Length: 381
Image 1 (cartoon, rainbow, N blue to C red):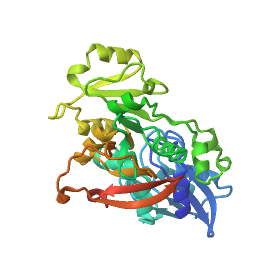
Image 2 (image 1 turned 135 degrees about the vertical axis):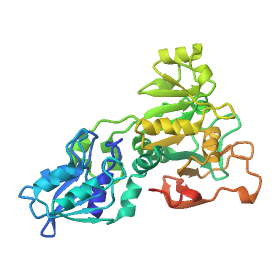
Image 3 (image 1 turned 90 degrees about the horizontal axis):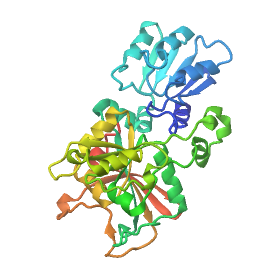
Image 4 (image 1 turned 30 degrees about the vertical axis):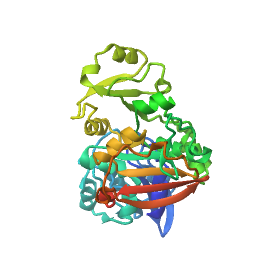
């Protein structure tokens, strides 16, 4: 199962919006077939693994990181393929949370006389697909907020200057997080201050090579094109100009308040290629962020990568909408006049937000921290 999880990780940059799944076929204690679900609409991992077996798979044990599907989607049911192959046993890391499957694949295997084991390395399998699980269970994506700050917690000078707090290694690392997301979210303030493109600039093969894996071993990975996540801009006042670089290189959605969706500014942005959507307005007159997450979940976004300033990041935090913090701390001090990490006024120690840091790594000269809000520390699934 550990090998199947390794194979599943190879699909992080290509298989969205489907889950990341790996599979191996074992006969006589030896792996005789391996498979990864590379791209949505193509053969699933267990089918790839069965096809890789040079001999007869009858009597084999198949390890899969996610319950095999039992319904006709863009591909036939994988449970039927396992039954037809005559395998003797199927070991599954976790049950599929998709209501269209949700145990039905396991039931079909057992009804065919195949021995089934569920729950092997389940926590690791869940951690590999937090967005898919969240969307299936709650209809929303997993929200990961990326921030870069100085050691004194500042994200920009008082003038708004922020390029660059971190070095090239950290910025290269961010490409990995963008590439595995279904959408990238930012605010109009960030677009006005930094004029970012928010695109993925490296291929799946290059990203995997960064992780120490030789991509030439996996032809499907070498052939895979760069998948650009949907770019989403929260712009309650429609301040983003049509000349902004965010409109270059892919789909852009601007979420604005209803009264501005039919304005002259909206028409100019649509002419530039942006899609302007009116969404419900919160009590403070700003875009309702919960409605944005619901819309993204309905569109099939599993992981939402947020690159925003203290305003939007703080609003997400205040409303309890952050599932994971991705924080790069640079070895510098920017002083008390610089802008804070979050726009989140807290007055007492009792109000402070508790985090659980679950990963701490050096990326170049920056310290990368990953943390869950304490309330979500046990809610990856």
